[in-house]
Each structure stands twice: as structure tokens, then as C-alpha cells.
Amino acid sequence: MNVGPKIMGNLRCLSLALAVAATVITISEQAAADETTDVTSAVQVTAAMAEPALAGSCTEVRFELVNDGREDLQVLGLDAGITSRSRLVAKIGTGDTVTLESVSIPAGETIDFSRSRWFEFCGLTTTLQSGDSFVADLRIVGGTTPFSVHVH
Image 1 (cartoon, rainbow, N blue to C red):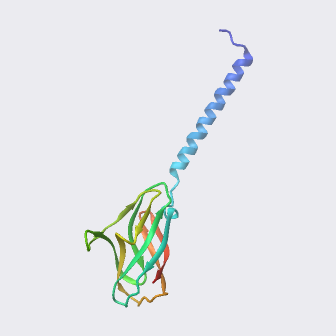
Image 2: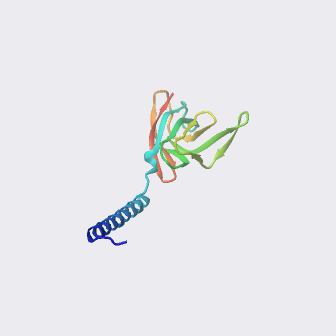
């Protein structure tokens, strides 16, 4: 088959355009893979509340956690300046509880930390009364998310 010079020129231009497009796609995919994802931006804490309690005693902190991200999250703990220690508690069976080291929140899921699992703050450094509020920091793999907790 005999191809004229004009068609050969067009084929060369088309080949060059395809090579450039493939290079651009490869570079953009590598850049996207190199970006660090801020997992804390995918976390929403709603309806956060604690029970009134005396200084030195314990209170339960309950809330809903929404993972709006595309990746699963690993919750490691909850910190606040009003407590000397905290733990993640899960209810197992009738009245029995166990302390968990962490809990996984699947991508796109909402987890309720108010019924079958919650955080317990013990060794309160101040008395918590109805109407008070304080800031807690949710520790997850990759960062922390501060949120306000209301005492009811």
C-alpha cells in the first residue's frame, strides 16, 4: 500500500499526540498517588454529649461518627484536658463491657458511639454540670479531630 506524504505527516502528528497524552495521564496518576490524604477532613462528629459528674469521678462520652472518606478509618482514642484517662468501652452481652484498643470505621459509614460502644473519661479534673461543654480530640490513624461535647 502506497501512502502519500500528507497522510504520513498526519499519522506522525497523531502518534506524537497520543504519546504526549499518555505521558500526561501517567504523570497525573503519579501525582495523585503521591498526594497525602487528610483523613481528618473526612470525619464528622455529631450529637456529642457527656453526663454530669463530679471531679475525680467518671463520665461517659457519646456521639455519632461519620466517615465521609473513601478509606476506612481506625479510631485510636479520645482525649480531653478535663480527664486523666479515657477508654473505649464496648457492651458485650447483658451488662458486661470490655475495653477496646481501637475500632475501624468503614468508608462511607456512620458509627454510633452511644449504645453498644462509647468512651469513658475517668479521673475528671473538674466537675461537669448540665449546660457545660468541653473540647475533646478524637485520635485516628493519621491525625486528630477536635469537637465540642455538651454536658446534659
